[in-house]
Image (cartoon, protein in one colour):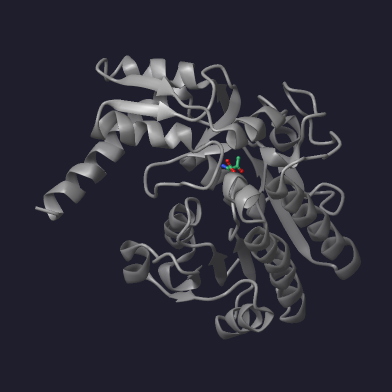
Length: 324
Ligand code: AKB
């Protein structure tokens, strides 16, 4: 990978993937491509960035040509909760946008495209615990269906057109740099803001809803490792489950309360997000990733809570100081 374009660069994962790729491959060699949400200042200051419309084929092709990219990390995506509300937008970004990126990559000679999948690739019929890579993917959410489409299309471009498209199916991601709002797993980020700001959080999921989760540094590493991996049977297995930890809202809130005893929590259930969460596995079997490219997560729930409170605390103190 010499010249990398990252789409969705202002999103939850993109805003942390770009700095890490720049650290490894050089600031000038990683182009941050966002849509309407402003790309964070640190990314704009450190290297090339641009804005584009992923649902417009011409703009995608022009982006890849202009920056002479050889690799794309395609992160633009409408997440699960918003996709249920705004199906047309989800179609334009997740379906048409994905096609545009693959097709423009093929036509401009880009071989390597990394497209993250999700626990949402699996649906209510999949086993709850330790869902394997080869489990039938029958999601019942718009987002999940678009992720399966992305995976099958990646395999089509690999098999028929000799490309090298890869991905990992990520659990819910916990992070402090940007505040996510469109997903089902976002409560596991929002509670930290509530805990620091007003020592209270109202959760939209039932207390015992178990979901697979991962801390951002592990997620970033999984994306870079799958991009760099020497994979023997790429065409048949370019998309891997990656797993880290699983917990319920109550288990996370208890871990935070051990550090912030004043935190209070109540629940006002959002039926849309509760139904989505109940359709997803509790944990993923990632033994294929461990065997094929030595995948291994580092963070557990206690490390996450400590790191989130430290980093988010600094970030919010800085914001407060700046606003006077
Ligand atoms: C979401 O909640 O929609 C995402 C995901 C699990 O893909 N975080």
